[in-house]
Length: 223
Image (cartoon, rainbow, N blue to C red; front, side, top):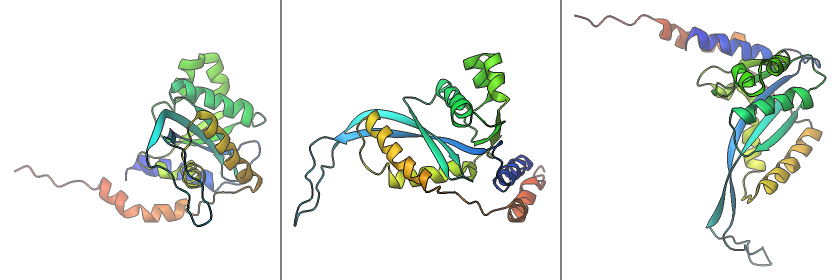
């Protein structure tokens, strides 16, 4: 555990435990690739005395990307399906976040991982500096420590999505998008929040030993 890891950890944990501010929402952002699969043969529906039967073979129809925006304090989440997840799609996702989802916010604290497309430079490359500067004035990127993307609460929401929505064969982009809407809307109506119990004071104690070990000078083996 390096000083850089601990510094990034403190920023993320402090953000999670700040009081909610409507003008400065906290949003966790992540992405996930999914396969589009359909049955190779029609399934046999369940009937009296006979369980539902489905052939193990399937037909693959490529992949799609899911962008996920989660506001853990309010229990609101939004999904966006794209064909790819390149710099272009990331840039438009950030504009969608700023101009559509949170158009009234003064700025948005965005927690995201260290993927090489998740940078301010990418927005400049795609939109040009004037438009990128406009967006970056309202987007504050906060990166999880390296190898610690589990600190991003969007990963927890993806786990729920996978078990509740993506646990079946979806053969087209339309099927995927409509299933996501059907999953997203009731969770938003119920305001299913995500609570993070670990605070910086306790985290600092937990990581104290590993931090000391990582900074301890290694013995000189030179004879």
